[in-house]
Image 1 (cartoon, one colour):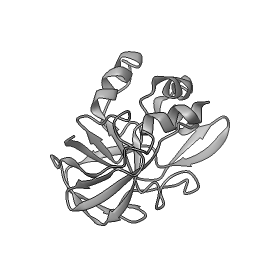
Image 2 (cartoon, one colour):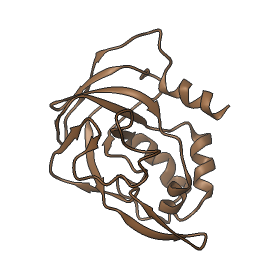
Image 3 (cartoon, one colour):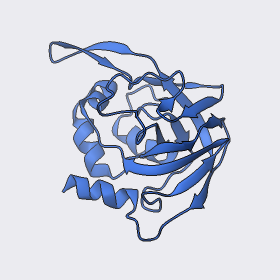
Image 4 (cartoon, one colour):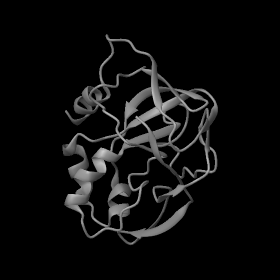
Amino acid sequence: MQIISLNIGDKKTVQWKNKTVKTGIFKYPVKHPLFLGDHGVENDTIVDTKHHGGIEKAVYLYSKRHYEFWRKLYPHLEWQYGMFGENITLLELDEHKIKKGDVFQLGEAIIEATKPRTPCYKLGIRFGDQKVVKQFWEADKCGIYFKVLKNGKVALKDILTLQKTDPGQPSIADMYNKKKG
């Protein structure tokens, strides 16, 4: 589970349904290491602090393998890592194998899996098509939010290494499917 992209975003103002909306979902890849802190990724903008960021959602990880699925559905988009609002894109990340509370080393940081990402209309804004929100729910490719237990820098090619797991906890995929109902 190697890092292939580090992504941050700035606040962006867009028009949606005749309203002005501010969002931080337009992430873009950077080459320099990122600092993971208790409340998020340094130099990354979180606009909607009710639903994103904070201790339980300090950093969002997503799998490159999922991109292959989405590229087939949206071949017209100009694809780059960070499209799903993730801070870190890994070569692979399996929501079915990672459990709530699993602890990992990533670069200098120690992080703990907390919950799946649930889609909102801002993902539709990013894709230019609101049907992606429903497709995201149905696709079972949610990515994972983590809290930061030990602050530290992460860099390209760092490996996500499992340190501790509790087999009695649900997988992130199970949590996601339970939210879907």
